[in-house]
Length: 305
Image (cartoon, rainbow, N blue to C red):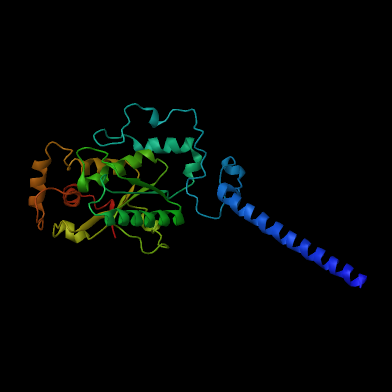
């Protein structure tokens, strides 16, 4: 009888000990889970660095774009950014841009490694949409572009301000493109994408090899410009422009047809008379671009897709 009692007590002791261990493990896991929410850094691996970039390149197995650069350090030599006359806006043309970019890239060799560096620029009006669904759709569409850029390692800039008081409405897309060219000398291309455009194929890659000989890539039909003189010859909702001196001059010429120009109304009448299917008054950026190509013969620099 005593033996059975001892065995029973031993069984109860082991059972209580097992329950204690299980309770301890559960409590420990709950504390760890709670701590991961308090300090999210503990759930992600620390990036390792490489000697080639000074120990700052994060390696997560994703396309990192230019994010690995050490932006806290800048070479002491002066660059075009030190020029007080430098302007990010229209009206103050940038001269010798190709030379300035080359010199800047020599002083920032990390950025020079990206041969086809692309900055995507998009944006919308400053004020909220009249219908709340509009703002929701804008957010969804921006997320679509951010995901695409994340996958392909592109930088993206979203602008919701009028960067020039006289260039609003459809003309508002030109100032951020011009500003991005100056703000990102490391970028070989600036890719404008309208806010209502949707990227349906996340694996699509721009065929940069096809664009090597061109400075301006846009969806359109060359014969509709030079033969039919149609304002519908191209779609300015999406275009790719090289970050070079030719593009700087081209953007300045395009902007001179906008309300920025005091003679805008006079130019608009001349341009509209030249187009065959302009159905409403006023000069929009697409009609202006068609007229610009008609008069300045930019076909050798332009690739229609």
